[in-house]
Image (cartoon, rainbow, N blue to C red):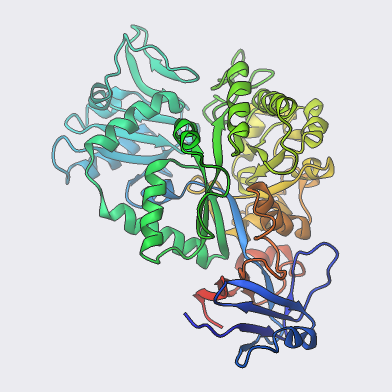
Length: 538
């Protein structure tokens, strides 16, 4: 790594500093990895005049933006996505079983077969499959298959037996074991309290897989190449260990902040880990809680039933009392709080928990309370969310991917679903992310979805609730400053200003000025992290 400072000149540099006009020069110290100066070229050169040598890059009018920060990822899951059986696009359960059986045929008997991305919503009868569907074709391997939402798992009888799940096993708190008419497990496990039983056995029985670490390395490199210089990931101890290995190998091209699972909270609190523990590349941010499930599996917690599932109010995975207890404990331990909430009842329960925590021990501006997804919010909760200072951690590509399911399940309520403009207008800070591997992690496609409210690959469709679109500036602000703020990193990430980390993206054109339809294909010249080019070239 060169110790010579990097100086960009003749550029169109969006600093994302409040009220600032674009700059034309930017200097980054490669030793500290931080911005030295930004502004007019004459002023920047004066500020760095103490340096005898500079590496000067003539941008020739290209645009520079702060490095984009994905506020909601699942990195280990994305890595496993590349090595497990891909069930996306399966037209029915039989096709899914065929793909799994083909993989199992080349594996030793008794070894686990894993897959993901099946979606019964698009099957002819929209029914959930059963363990018998798998048993007939794959009797000698335990099979565990995540639904596309990653809130439901389809397993066979051998997997249930390995996990000790039978007719006498009670439903875990906030989760459900699917059962047939005789009370036997039917092969569908709803939510993490149930699916964790399978994952725990799998982790014990499966030897360390070097492919997983290699896949993780490829995933973070690809995310960086797409313009991401930092991500926040919602995963547990195994993911953190694997990421640490990449850090030790100097194979981590972007910065990673962790929101750990609730089952790691007591261990973190016991040793005094608070938000910000770690270094500039790998650090702990907080703890993630779950208030409900997902839209497509009808486990999102609702104030009124699903239109296409009368009588079903979804599944509240954490009781209101336990939510208040958990949020308060996490905040008192000095960790940020992220709460998964899809349905409007889940959002309300999350806000109740946050309000109680703030009343008991006001945290001022030190801690962040955030709700992940906020896919449906009741009008009564909008202003309360703003008053409490809660961040809306949103994934704009969900809005264009879920639109048909949302219309079917929520009907007219979709006027306040994925309501990004309404949230921002209420004064609620936004943080943008992807939820990879559930949807694309390409930030330019995600920006397009936020601005246009349509999948860029279905240009003939009308935008979905276009009044909820974000402006290009608000979307980019939420992908940089907003995401940094959501993890308490707003003093070091998200802007290009002296003292901030020198993370930026060099683009062929200005994302705030190009036609929205051209945004997904906007060429990325280089991605710079800490003053070092990690992807592309200058």
